[in-house]
Image 1 (cartoon, rainbow, N blue to C red):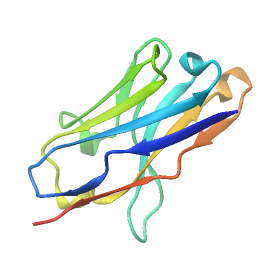
Image 2 (cartoon, one colour; image 1 turned 90 degrees about the horizontal axis):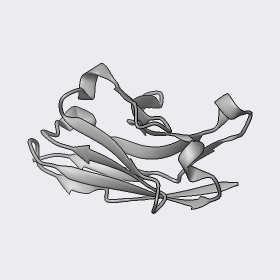
Image 3 (cartoon, rainbow, N blue to C red; image 1 turned 135 degrees about the vertical axis):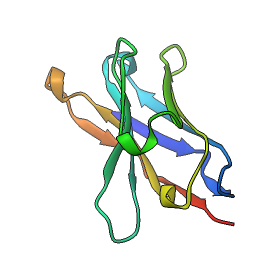
Image 4 (cartoon, rainbow, N blue to C red; image 1 turned 120 degrees about the vertical axis):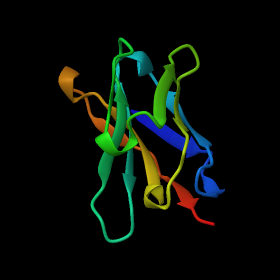
Length: 118
């Protein structure tokens, strides 16, 4: 069992930055593929960025060059640094722990709201 708790969301002006944090509570954090997803009103949840156990990353095209995902396995934390934010980045951002490749479960946090507006 893994519990995920996001923090760091808020209101920011276009062009601004935010850093989201995700604290993971449970065992074997380091083996999970960790990800950030987002869901805007009226839209489906979409992948933002993922980082695997070895530190390899992949990003949605819309955020490449602006967002950076990182993880701290010693402290069971995952981060999403978001720069050059645009109104289109407004959404609820969810932390995800994916253990399917090991036959384990997939876990979600409760989400944190990010609003980009002047």
